Image (cartoon, rainbow, N blue to C red):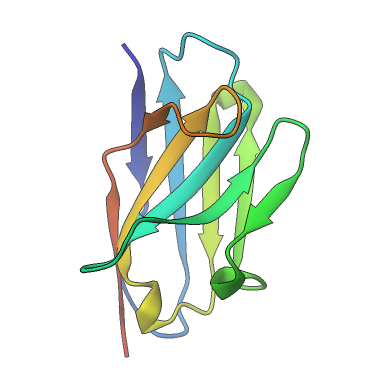
Length: 116
């Protein structure tokens, strides 16, 4: 059974930092892409950051220069370091694991709340 367990969400003031972690277990394939998506109230889910096994990364324009995605392949873990947080970063953040690029599995989500 595949499990993606996220941690690190919480509440922070604008300008602060948080680090999200996601550990995958039970995946039936070699993981290529690991990523983070988010969904704010009343908005569609959007890609925040993605990293592939080849080392490439992709970020939403709104988080470039503030967020950094990284991974530990030996631990099947993906991280999202979020700095200079803004109120508009408030959302539920989901980690994903993919055999290719499109997510095959999703985490349960972790709430990030940024107050002004």
